[in-house]
Image 1: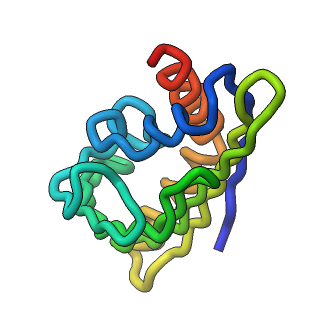
Image 2 (image 1 turned 90 degrees about the vertical axis):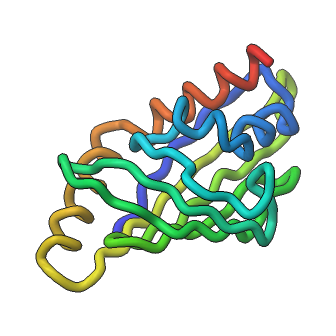
Image 3 (image 1 turned 30 degrees about the vertical axis):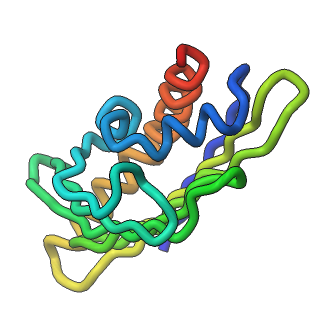
Length: 145
């Protein structure tokens, strides 16, 4: 298992950042890897909600079943189960000029050659700065709201 982290600050309040993180329509604009929400049990990502997302990694179509464990003023925590398992956390803290946002994504490879290759491709994207860029897009969307 490898974990990737990033932190940034925003002029937006934590509630505005959470609004961007939990808006299924905004996910495609900020996700570190291009994904789309195919199915969702609630209108927004909320504690206890489930979703089905799909996208492409390394030229391969993949899908994940997502379970949201927490979506509140402290942040968003979820797990995604697919050919690669992901544990994702976005932590929100008030800051003097807005908020501080920290993100972590743990990549857990599954069994099999395809799963290992997809885990390596996901890790390479995250190691290349995709998570930090995603945070930049999140705070920009929150500040513009």
